[in-house]
Every structure is written in structure tokens, then in C-alpha cells.
Image: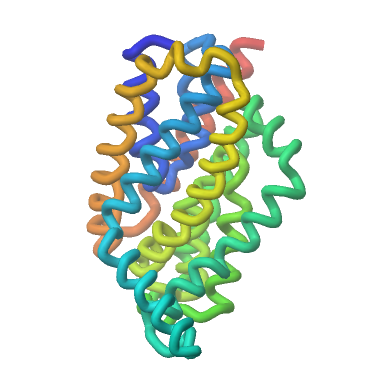
Length: 274
């Protein structure tokens, strides 16, 4: 991997981790479309690092919320009233929403790993993301606020997060759509989506980090990866800020169209190269 490739893929990760267009799908498709032959081990190490970068971005953006949630949860446990405060309830709902993805990821890990090696599968999953956002815009009544999220909503949205372990199924796209199908307004659905991403991204990063430590000669390429890490962190932060503002006034249709175009382009390239 070159420094230019590192920066470009870091930019792709930072933008697509939070915009509802699938970061995992783009990290499969972009090198494929550009004809980059990046060794699987190098790609794996890089993907782990840029995922940590976007995790850092979401933690920084929601730092005050996270501190408030952690303090409220600790106070609630100490007073034996874990659900007495709204911020504490939010914390428990975030953890509950992560359960489906954790169970799903462990049980079908091998299938998911094969999907990451298939641009064809990724293209079809992108169609799925596009369709889901279209349906959410058509059916969601968008009248509920963030404070009205219940444990049923959390599990429902968590189920959509579980689906997004496949490349091409956007985590933010599926979870925001899931929230909208429960009649949440777009900004509250997006906020809950971003907050619930933190435990899952943290757990995934820790597991991948353990695999990373077992690989030989990891340090030799870290200097090439650093520009991509920095790019992913900065663009990830900016994309969160931009999307929350965008969804206050505009629908998801533009992202649905984009996913459809990317899927069609990938399929065209795939069949031309056969």
C-alpha cells in the first residue's frame, strides 16, 4: 500500500462510516474498481486502524453525551435506581441495542468473512441498503423524539445493526432506517445510531487488535497507515456533524440513489472483467 492509497482509503472510511452508504462495502469496492492489488493481510491491518480512527471521531463528537450517560448510569447503580434518569436509560438502551449484533456476528463469522472477499455480494447488499432507506422514507411517520425511545425500539434498531455486519449493508443506513420505521424523526434516529455504534466498534476493534498482534511484521507498514488514520478521524468527525444537520431538513433518498448507482457500477465492472 502506498501513502496515496492510505489517504484515499482513509477518506473513504471516514466519510462512509457515518454517511448511510456502507464503509465496509466501499473498502471492498474502491480497491476493486481502481484495480489495486492490496495483500489481504495489509488490507486487514489498515481496516482495523481506520475503524479505530472513526471510533475516535464519534467519541470526540459525542463526548459530553457519553460523560453524562456514564455518570448517570454509575449514579443510578449506586443508588439502586438504574433507570431513574433519562441519560441512564439511554445508556442501558444503547447496550441493549448492541446485543443482536454481538450474537449475530459470532454465529455467522465465516459467512461474513467470505462476503468481504466478494465484490458481487457487496453490490447486492448495497441494493439492500438503498431499498431499506427508500422504504423507511415512505413508511416512517417521523413524529417521535429521542427521549421516547423504548427497549422495543432499541432491540428493533439493534436487529438492523446486526444485519449491517455484511459489506454493503450500511450500519448507519440500516439503523437510521430502523429507527424511522419505528416512527422516530430522522435526527433522533441518527443520534441513537451513532451512539449505539460505539460499543460495537469498540468491541470489534479490540477483537481485531488481538488478531493484529499475532501477525508478523505489522510495524513495517504502520508509517504508511498513519496518514490514512488521521484522514479517517478528521473526515469521520466532519461527516457526523454534516449528516445530523442534513437530516434535520432532508430525506435519505439521495443516499438511496447513490447506493444504487455504486451497486450498478460494481456489477458492470464485475461482469466486464469476467
